[in-house]
Length: 127
Image (cartoon, rainbow, N blue to C red):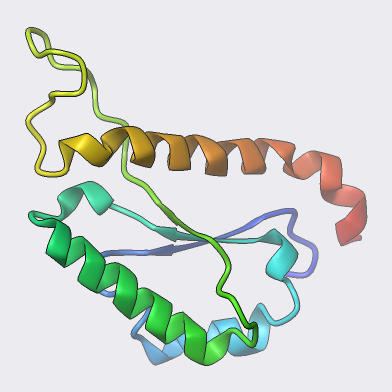
């Protein structure tokens, strides 16, 4: 992990950071590597209700707060797979349960991809 340019840590909505193995990795293997660690709550488009999303996000924050020794948690990127535009639907209407938030999820995905693409420029810092 010390030699990696970027570390992406993905969490699924159904298990938002609750395993002991994940918490152990954060406390032991990734300690001190906050500058290149990106935490992603993936598959955010699978939630049926915003309440379910809030519960999973809150649970992930709670679990991370136990193992990340910082006053504030790092940013948690929420994202999903790109959704192809469906013919005949107006802009922003794609039939998904959280359709109004898909633009935010896409922007979050773009932010993570941009950080991954910038990683080789920081490679000297990781040697």
